[in-house]
Image (cartoon, rainbow, N blue to C red):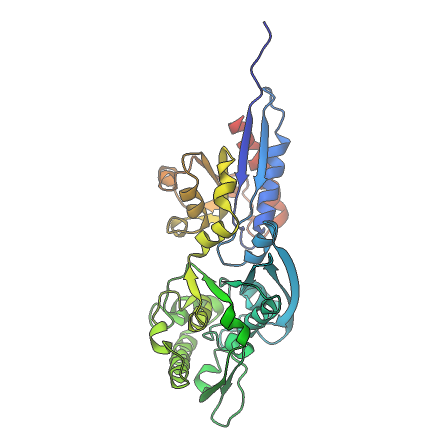
Length: 385
């Protein structure tokens, strides 16, 4: 009697975040898909179909994720965090533009990787917003992760039309060091912003100042010494006071708003401009149409560089898992600090890590990371077919 059993077909949605320092989200998805597809042709003749959806949560890689989902990339040149011109890009689909801090004034743009806690500026981010406005979008998504500066958005606001003057009437460039030198603020924002919806995409909930503020919590990661942290916090107090004197509505109250401290205080400046704050992870899942994409798949594969307590607190893989329903959810990571008995907290059926496949440090080795992900893809396919 002939065998009428049809070969098994499994449809997967590969929806990872980046592996920071090693691979972009698109590279992670490509490597996993390569491994999964190479295993098509098991003894049972099974097939794995792969749909790729590289993701971002409002941090670095947000423009790349939007482009991978169908947005167009538009290149521009902006002033880097320490004044040098740097190439940047935004994503645009005819209605929505995505502008990110990371590729305009991010840590990765500091010359020779040298941290500049006091002198880095957010001016380049403001210049990228100006460039986006030239395309006449209906809305701009402001992706705030990965900043090198703690200037309260002073540099950004300078690029958008405001002048920050010292006691002698000289214009200030905009940096953490400049904050305490602000004596007055003049000018007005470019008129195009008044007719453009601003979306602040961030999952940071810190206020601008104080023990939980931007300088205290994130300043040390940007090279700030204890003395620098104190100086930056005092400088941000000057900024809020001078903004209030200049007539900015809510200048004092918005400094305490959860999220004002994101990206070294760029979040505060965005709130002053009327931006609507949203969860970066959830907003980008909506923007990239995750819900309809996962509905056509049997299995969701997600991941990021490290799966740990912060992941459980709401980072991108947790948001993916929450939206994936009853279908199996597999996570892939560079490392995992969660024991197997805690996988159920994210409804994960399995977690694969690069550290299980090598004794080498793959965190700064893109080629090794990609090779390991291809092997993991093969092993996932074997478990599914």
